[in-house]
Image (cartoon, rainbow, N blue to C red; front, side, top):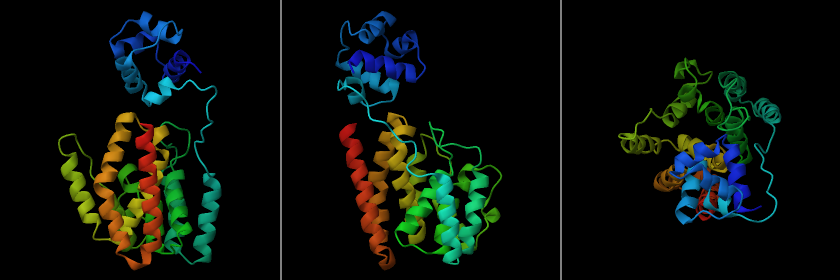
Length: 272
């Protein structure tokens, strides 16, 4: 695909007219038209501007290899994960987890992951399945994986409404952070991560959450949000991972989560 073809496809994907894209860049629509027709190529500053305006990497603008890779919105079917989770909860005698499976689905009903048609429940189900794959059989922790976003994202549901015991509710409380503004975000996030470090189970849930969010952010976040996610992860997650390393029962989880998180960070940084 040519650079012009890339620009046109990305612009149309964002449902922008040539005039609207030109306005974002401070150029004429004739310039955008010329780029898309490959009459001439945008200069470096405009390539950077195009990437920012279209929420893509510079390489997505410049890539001239024929064909594109097919992307998957989801790796597993959430309904299959639901069946697996309920089966495990029954077999391992995990009553809180069993109740949380249906509670989480109902709480997130009708909500999709950012910029996709994937039901939001795919995210908490993925955390719980990831924990089970790490041989975690802790009822409170698995229930918290399933419910970790309910209080933060679902209006009208508080900690006391969760179908769990106090331990799971405390984990959910710790991984739920207050709304932030540009002015107070750093202060709020420092306090949030600092308090969490006192509870290894909450730390494990948060690391599982970050792992899944990193794996899906390319399709769901703008470039600005991706940069912020990378920066936040590099700032706060080494200390969280150290908590897991220092907790004997989570040593194996620590090794795998550190590998997954840091590998994804390196991949994104290279591509961006």
